Image (cartoon, rainbow, N blue to C red; front, side, top):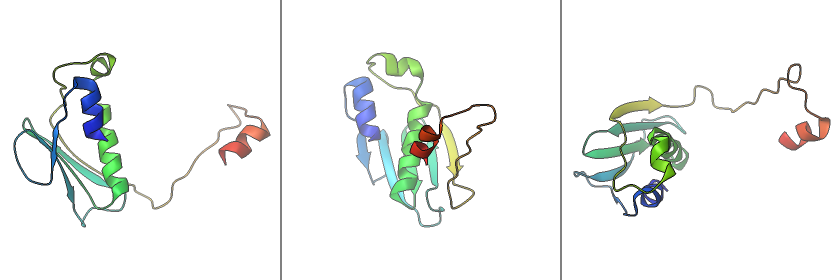
Length: 116
């Protein structure tokens, strides 16, 4: 998914590997990371996404995608710049919630039932 996004931005496919090496996007499984959590390590030569589950890997990929500047998404470029970073993120709670503020943002009953 990330390799496809980079291909769409640049026209060339990056190297995706489980091996360490310069210029690669590395995906690794790490059981010590909480469910749906991920760790990103972006250096000038490598990008590593570590997760314990596919959901965590997807969350990491989405975070990398948001780190790519909006200008890069506007047109094809020879290269895409991703800032160096080290991130660890995991959900604090095991359940997801949704808040509907109907006091300040009224929604019809049919729309609320559709959301739920």
